[in-house]
Length: 309
Image (cartoon, rainbow, N blue to C red; front, side):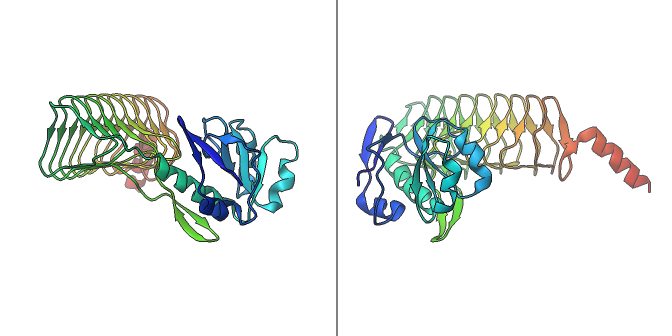
């Protein structure tokens, strides 16, 4: 059996032990195809292998023409009769997919030596990983801060004390072989003129997506920004918790102790009040409050009615 993946410009033959683990001892004939890696149902990478463990997600998968092959179990084969997707029938699609995904993610990690501009000021107690980091002109890195591999920092960026940037977080999947922790294979890209306050954590991307902090963003002390988030220009994250895969527009203000749930989009010039818990998209120029968050003025009117009782 020959399994070939193409990661960027690198052609890779998959280790036989990994093949046996993912595809079973009998193996599988992939028709000598060269795939560009693995992808979830929303992938934008051409010619990838996906997986389907739950029938409710089948339309997302078959409607994405980027996915050319798919791990499935035998019970779902009939659902693919009218598709051109090459089926890889296995006992546990999630286990096979994420075992192979983690193998590729580790192979993909950068071995390029770290580059730090001569004008950058790095505190002597800061830890900068030896590979996969780029730090631009006039940056300041504070005491005890850790910058891990896969981080690109623009110019005039300030990162305070005791921060961790570019780390992994917990992304785990249940399989019949137990829980698999998913490797983070994306980058953290911090653009110019960003300020990151002390004790903040910013996670790099995964599923071949990046976490991106756009220009002129302010991130206050004790903020948390999860994987694959995009934070728009001039936005302010003021000690809030941003879960994964959120899109934060331009000039957004997220006030202290608020939480933005996975996959939420916040429109340009919107505002999240102190302590709000946001579980759905917020339109531009909108302010929301409460747990769970809704229109701020409506919340105040309702609060007034309750207070008068």
